[in-house]
View 1 (cartoon, helix red, strand yellow):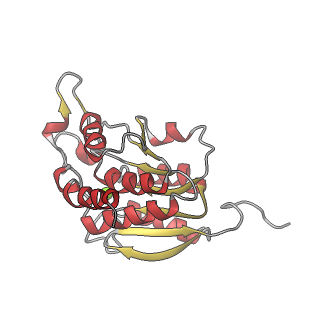
View 2 (cartoon, helix red, strand yellow):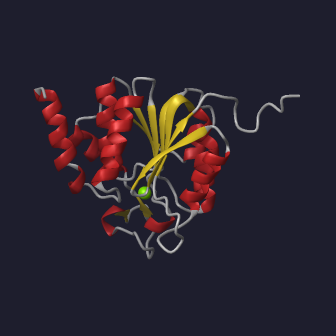
Length: 223
Ligand code: MG
């Protein structure tokens, strides 16, 4: 292992535990491996960067692959981050605007991980960022809002941009409804049913699908 690789390994080990977020190390390391491999095909993209915990793993993988990571978040918090909700963090509440603001923390994480030359932050709702998107992506990681509406928007806006051989990864998959919300699992099942993706082994709650060749979803009746 050369010195640069050793420095990456050290960052992967020490930085994520210091960053706010909800991604276990084993899932993060899978994202790192996927980005490092897929990144050779083209840029990667994540939806729901929050304070940048997943961005560390994906960004370091992209940097090693010589590509970039587009990182989308409006940084106003998902439903569950708002005041009074289960995952609200008062540190991220901006009293001046009366809104959540995770962008400052996110920028700090990019600097600490030394990935400012790799990550392109897009501070916008996912549907707005997608409006004129035309670049094929080697990996799309969906970890945005967990309402059915938000998850469906992320899926319909971005899944079609995954290039053949690329990956669609979805966080917080709970096949058992007693263990967690069903929106991410719903879009995971839609992706499988589309015939455009093959399932790879899950890592904890991280679903991983690989885009196979073939026609677009719903396209081409063959007549
Ligand atoms: Mg998540």
